[in-house]
Amino acid sequence: MKKFVLSFVVIVSFIGYSLYQRALGAQKMPIITAQNTSNSQSSQTVIQSSPTSASPTSQFSIQPTAAAVIPTSPPTSAPTVSSGYRDGTYTGDSIDAFYGFIKVETTITNGRITAIKFLQYPNDRDTSISINQQADPMLAQEAITAQSSKVDIISGATDSSEAFIRSLQSTLDQAKS
Image 1 (cartoon, one colour):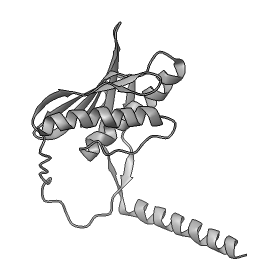
Image 2: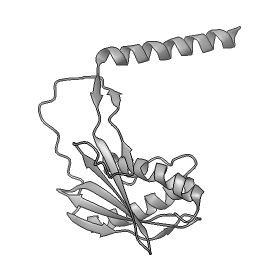
Image 3: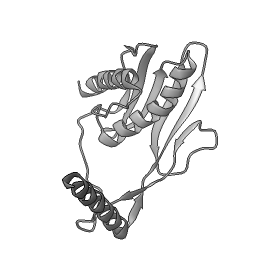
C-alpha cells in the first residue's frame, strides 16, 4: 500500500509540474542543422547553430521544439560570456570509436563555439551509419549549447560519444593555448 501511495504522489507531482510549466508558456529553441557530404576518404557533417530554418538539402535537422521556461526577470540584453577561446578553426585528434574513428573540426567566432564539423565518423556499416546519423547532431548541438566538451554520453552511442568528446576537447585545447 505504501508503494502505491508513493507512486501516486510521484505521478501527481509530475503532472502538476508539467501543467505548471505549460501555463508559464513556451519558448522556441533555435534550429540546429547538419549537412552530410561524402567523398571517397571521409564523410563530413556540419553542425551549426542557426536562427533560420533548415536548408532543404539537410539530411538531418532538429526542428524547433517548445521548451518550458521559468521567467525570473525580464531579460535586458544577452549576457556576454567570455570562454577564453581564440577565434579560428581547429582540427581535433582522430579518436578510435571501436567501429571507426571520429575527428571533428571546431569553429570559434567571437570566443564562442559556432560550428562543429565531423571530418570523420564510423560509416562503413549500416548500424554505424544509423547510430551516427542520430548521435552526431545531438552531440554537436549539446556542445554548442554548453560551449564546452562536457556533454552527456548518448545511450547506444557510447563509443561515438566518448570519441567525440575527446576529439572536441583536443580542438578546444588548441583554441585556449
